[in-house]
Image 1 (cartoon, rainbow, N blue to C red):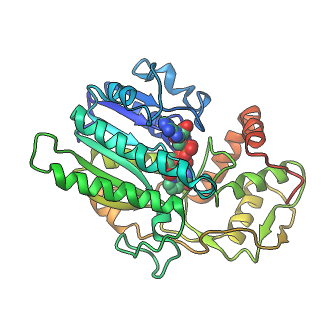
Image 2 (image 1 turned 30 degrees about the horizontal axis):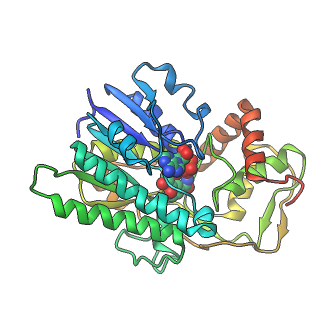
Amino acid sequence: MELTGKRFLVVGGAGFIGSHVVDQLLQQDVAEVVVFDNFSRGSRENLEQALLDERCSIFPHGGDILQTDVLQDAMAGMDGVFHLAALWLLHCYEYPKAAFDVNIRGTFNVLECALKAGVSRLVYSSSASVYGDAVQEPMPESHPLNNDTFYGATKIAGEQMLHALFHRYQGTAQHFDYVGLRYMNVYGARQDYRGAYIAVIMKMLDRLDRGLPPAIYGDGSQAYDFICVSDVARANIKAMAADATDQFYNVGSGTKTSISELTKLILEVTESDLEPAYEPAGQTFVQNRIGSIEAARNDLGFLTMVKLRDGLRELVDWRNGHREQVEARRRAAGVDIQQP
Ligand SMILES: NC(=O)c1ccc[n+]([C@@H]2O[C@H](COP(=O)([O-])OP(=O)(O)OC[C@H]3O[C@@H](n4cnc5c(N)ncnc54)[C@H](O)[C@@H]3O)[C@@H](O)[C@H]2O)c1
């Protein structure tokens, strides 16, 4: 879809990734960007800069995807929808019914309202969680869906609903295009403490701030694909602008980094000479995960631009400039800095 002059609804746009999507949409020559969010996890602070742009607003009559009449109203006249609203992995683990309501029923509501409103294109935030542990590396999009978490189940359900409704309405007046993005492990400015794998970065930085050694759980060999949030937002914009439809793409850096390597980089970036402290392994859902980046490169023209070292430096700078916000996020997540 050509983005120039178009109107976009960003569902979950006050959140970590969504707010960066909003920022990057506003760098394009778009007509309007409306944020639809219930602020259960997102914040107005995330949109501080974006709201200075008169093309950007928060939908004024509500922002919950479970309130379908309000949602339908917000969709009116929109050309494209980014759907990022969801409950996160551990919340889905603790509260599967709430996860069903928001991630599955809520996603159905977004799709139904988009269809009724005649939205042309939708970009859906899926997750690499759909794959579970890798049986093949790097994982192509055809990798088996070995997920065994409720969160992953909700993302698979979202993907399947999109695929089925695309085929149901293909060739009719309500036809819409979509792509789904399976993000790897996203880090960066505005992140909080609630990512299952990513919170480790914030916790290490907290401890370093206080002169305490960063903690590594287990032997540190667990390895993930860390991708900077600005790259993930760019993938969303590329996905909206692309012609590809009815497809799911990995969004990752294509580089595998172990927790030990990550810790070393964090120590370098913060110029710390502390040594990591090894602690007994805690709860991890996935030990090993790296996605193939070929399909996103070929079909969406997407490749990451931010190297992990540079992204970590940006995150440290953001933390230094937003001490109060970081503190509030830490309190909200109940993180005790003294605990490794
Ligand atoms: N952060 C990651 O590493 C990662 C990895 C893979 C996939 N994802 C997916 O990307 C998307 C964005 O993730 P994020 O990290 O920015 O999470 P986030 O929690 O920061 O953003 C989600 C937003 O949705 C909003 N929301 C929640 N329930 C809502 C509801 N009922 N109605 C309206 N808004 C609601 C929240 O307030 C929040 O602003 C999610 O779908 C997530 O599952 C994230």
